[in-house]
Length: 331
View 1 (cartoon, rainbow, N blue to C red):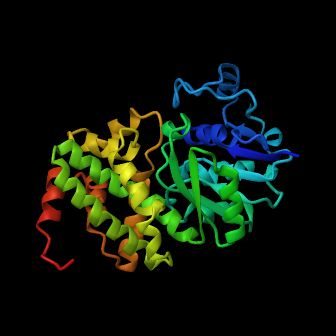
View 2 (view 1 turned 90 degrees about the vertical axis):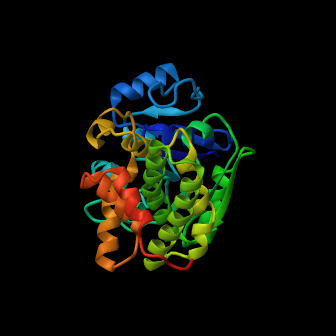
C-alpha cells in the first residue's frame, strides 16, 4: 500500500516537494492550499504559474483546499508554510491535525514574537509529536526541474530521520541523515540574515573579495549563535550551514539576497517587500536573531548591521564602514 504524504502549503517549496515526493510509485501525494481559487487554478492548469512558471505538476498529485481531504490517511505531514504565518495557519488547521503523525518541516526562520524555531511552533500548536527538519542548499526552482541537489534530514530520532531520508531520496535528490535538529533549523534561519548582507554587497558593487569574506565571517556568526542554543558546531560546516549559505548568497533565486541587493542600490525596504510575490524570511528573522543575540550577549556584528539597515534606516554604505572599521582581532 502506498504511503500517503500531505503537504501543507501552496508556495514554491511546497510545490517542489510535491513533485519530488511523487517520483516514487510507493508514495501518494496531496497538497493543501489555503485559497480555494488557487487550488482550483493549479489543479486545472497543473502549474503554479505565479511561483514556478513552466513547471508541470503531475496529475497524480492531489491538490485541494479541503484540509480533511488532504490529510485523510496521510502517514506524514510536510509543512511548507513561511515561518511568519506558520503559527496562525496551524492554529486554524489544528482541529483536523489531531492524529499524532510525524511532521517534516521545510520551514526556515524564527518567529519574531516568540523567537521559536519551526519545530517548536509546530509542537506548541499541535502538541507533542516528532518533527524532522529538512535543510540544505535546495532552491525550489531547481528541485522542481530535477536538477541535482543534496540536503540533510535532522531529528533526535535517527531512525525517523533515516526514514525521511528514504522518502525524499531520488536519483537527483540526495539526503543525509542527522540528529542535530536545533542546528539545522538555526542554520536555515540565520543564513537568511547573512544573505541579506551578501545582497547588500552585490547592490553596492563591492565584488567577490568582499562577498567571500562576508560569507566566511557569516558562518562564524551562525555557528556562534547556534552552539549557544545547543546546536553542534559541525552542523554549520555541513549542508545545512555553509552549503545553504553559499546557495542563498549567490543564487539569483535567493529572495533574501535580492532584498539586500535592492537595499544596496538605494531602495527602501517597504517598497521592496510590497513588490515581492513571495516571502523573504530573513527580514523578520533578523529581528528575532538580534533580540536573542542582545539578550544573551552573543557577538554578531554582521547581523547587527543588517538589523540597523532594515529597521533603523542606516545606509548600507555606513553599515559596511562600521564592519570594516571594527577593532582588529585574531582569527
